[in-house]
Amino acid sequence: MDKIIARHLTADLYGCKASRLADEESLSVKVASLFEEHGYQVLSMTTQDINEDHSALLILLSEGHFAIHLYKSIAYVAADLFLCEFSAAPEDLLQKIKNIFKPEKFRTTYLKRGDFSVSGADMKPQTKTRVAPLRRIHNTGAKVIRLLAHRKH
Image (cartoon, rainbow, N blue to C red; front, side, top):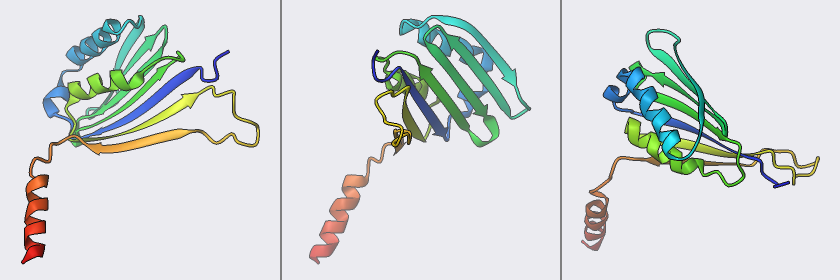
């Protein structure tokens, strides 16, 4: 048995494009197609309006699941991708999901699920979290140059 039996990735997408959150039907088709393009089998898909501002999409895959919650008024998306494969690469799929929503920034947390190599004394979950802005900061170099020039004077 492999030591890790599943890969689990959660993502918080902040400042998403409003137009990308508006059409849930189109969104569900895009996301389902994305999984099929990557060779995953979509078993079922459901969308649910929780209230006027919050909706959810759940896709059950033969290899795991994908759940996403959309909060339109705050331009926020919470995503959960669970793939029951040792060699799964959920980061690749997440990059494509980010391309759909075009967030200003995001935070991801990666979990290795079913790690049978840990001893009973060390059962803390192994997580890796990454926070990164997606906007290009094209003037950073200019700021550094100005700062260095200012220090010379």
